[in-house]
Image (cartoon, rainbow, N blue to C red; front, side, top):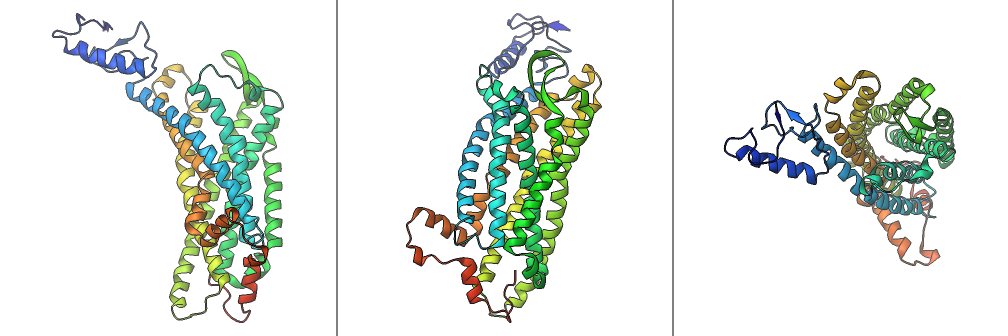
Length: 403
């Protein structure tokens, strides 16, 4: 064991080459913001971990730094694009031309829930973790006050539940429209859609009431400034309920959406073959096909953006709460590395709340047309409702829609 010495006359080096490596690593760590302890030791002096606390490595620190930097700089971009995109989407789906369709009602509700999630969840998390990283002198103290703490947690849980389960509800609606078209007229109507959205909202409001009840402004085990967190007296109960909530907004929707989408795609392939023989294509069928393609795009992104973060979060959450029992075990488990990975997957997960506008624009010609109409003045009499137009052009005795 040898004491770290940045001099070229270090006893650990005979020709000075090792000292040069030490200098390089020292400067790298110093400029990366890594704290180098005075009494750091290493089993051999050529180790790149010489100035790091035992159990941690250069790779761990660099991954953590890269993850936090990625999170701190990319999240504000996600917030800006997401808020703007969801506001535009909401405007389009509530427009006179689109609001008569049940699918538009679902997509308007999804845009609203994504907007609330960006404000009460993504924004607040960035203020706590990202802004403080960019400017350590900034303290967002108002978030750690009684009342604000509980309200913010409650709204973030409600909005995240709605964002996930409204996609599920929309998937079920499209599944019925594609695979059970005869039942579509009775189930997939604007009035039934509104009832489903209201019911889902009521379930969310009641289901997550536990979060503000079991949370508050408390001091950590090491003291310091009190912050918004779970009540220490109900820590285990909060852990169990949060775990159930995490499964309900990720794993369960993922399974339902995946199964139904496979059935939808299978049915579309079968009907595509029949369409070559049947030349009847109505405007209604084209619009509903676009909504089905939009659903498939939303569902795919939901899975891609959610699963990595959920997997890493579960791993870190379980390990930090109930796997490690001592500091020795804690330090030996690449905590820095996994925290960095968590920041990266968290940022990717946030993209789920800002990407829908681009998916609508890419997959929906009618959506693009409505977006253009938001910025271009059109005489009222020239604007026709898609829902009214589809009813006029449809024939009840013909296959109204193959989607």
